[in-house]
Amino acid sequence: MNFDFSDDQKMLRDQARRFLGERCPVKAVRGVLEGAHGHDAALWKAIAEMGWTGTAIPEAYGGLGLGHLELCVIAEELGRVLAPVPFASTVYLFAEAILAAGSEEQKQRLLPRIASGERIGTFARAERPGAVTPKSIRTGFKGGKLTGTKTPVADGMDARHAVILARAGEDGGERGLALAVVDLDGAGVKRRALDSIDPSRKHAEIVFDGAAAECLGTGGEAWSLTSLVLDRAAVLMAFEQVGGADRCLAMAKDYALARFAFGRQIGSFQAIKHKLADIYIGNELARSNAYYGAWALSTGARDLALAAAAARICATQAFDFAAKENMQTHGGVGFTWEYDCHLFYKRSRHLALALGPQRVWKDKLVNELELSNAA
Image (cartoon, rainbow, N blue to C red; front, side, top):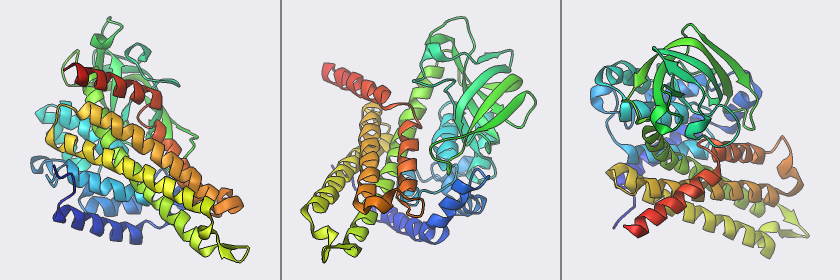
């Protein structure tokens, strides 16, 4: 079985790398990190004009209709440059939720605006620190109104629309949950910016006080639909993490070849060679799992949940390790604000928690392995 990308997809990757290399230098990331704006609006507009926001959205809804493999290619390049745009919230989560559970009317109304880049979306699940479980959801959705608080919400200050996981029934478990779509500019919605470990990806607390919303999907399926959306997002985010980890390896290698100590390149010392080799091994292992996830995502394979959990765990660990070892290779200067190493460490920590803590994905991986072995 060939898991490699096609020639056309590799051409798309090369095009995306050149484009982002020109339009998203590190100073653009620092500009968002140090500024008050939630994202780089000029870059977001340029990305939308390239059609990337509609990559996996069918042509009937204003998208390119290419597929998830092409979206994986783009995700890796966005991760390589730490693009400070709400791509993950809008495309991996909001758009995928509408595609998975939206009515025809909802798709026709919302997806063209997402594909064009006109609107930013997000997906709000968490209400407090820790793992999100059916019992942890307290936000209510009754009579077409939302009441409660979601925090932290990625890109919550910039998003126009959000998919909300809320409680609609008396059942305290999965059956009592519902998904709702809400206009965050409407009445009954208050937002407050939050501090986060990666200020280039802003977060918010969103309070609903009788905000008008509409149901997404059918009753009793909200938790399973949420799991499906998270599985899809996990594969796509794994490619972002692989891209970031690869950039960390390149930065560490370049510094090791340029930095001299005791009359020698530090890259000639065995300790540095081992660091770089360990980063490379971790990155390649993450890439192989990400490719498996891409195959499962693009083919609708039954083992998507297993592939997504494996890709999520492996890519998170690889990016975290690469970011740390990149700083270590740079030595004392690696921890300073002037060097770019900390930007990658911040992003690695953000992505590690973006879809829930690692222990949740590890438990899921074990459960899926048990189910596959039992079958």
